[in-house]
Image (cartoon, rainbow, N blue to C red; front, side):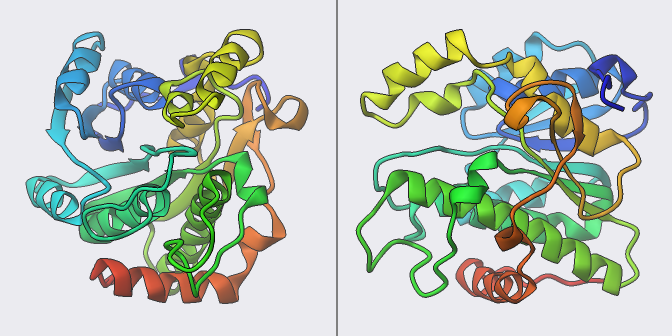
Length: 292
């Protein structure tokens, strides 16, 4: 399947997809392709104005609803609007390498948005999800280390890339643990993950440092398009992959290319850490998963 492309997406008519952060970048590209294939797409994003502009450029049934993943009250409010069955939840939104900031709930911004917000959202929607949960991780998970005793960077010196790597490793630990728990409960719902490789998106423009300029240059010279970066997400969302799968680009160092199933780091497969992170995430978010 090394030549898989967006034109290979099967008919999605009658299916509902919720995708976070789809007002730009790979999220918007994925949402547009799913809507083109006939899915009812719900774009869940913080900036609904930008979401509406993105939706207007898509063909097919697309709706925009407000969701700020950095604020658990917003996550809960959004979840209450989702009364219909959801075939696919795509946990796509994220922030990268930001200065030290705290969410309204007191979480470090990157772990709060990239992991804890999506953990809470998935748990709140789980009884409505029929097919799968796709969580967008990053090859940067390989540089991540989970500090269960200081998940929110309250005791150690903040490192923006360390915080990003931790949040992306958390995405994979969550995906694999969710898959194990769904399987144990006899649920047909799959938990899978994807990463875009190096794709040109707005994600690289919020470090508030000289890195913004350097990454803009990198986007022009080295990165693949957002449309191509969205292919692993789409592959994970619509092909018959088993729970616990991880999709990424097939090219050198998984930076670009057609999607295929790839491997994650040994740390991402650490079941003991995954279980402890799950318990801590339930404690921090106040969202307890109910299976079955």
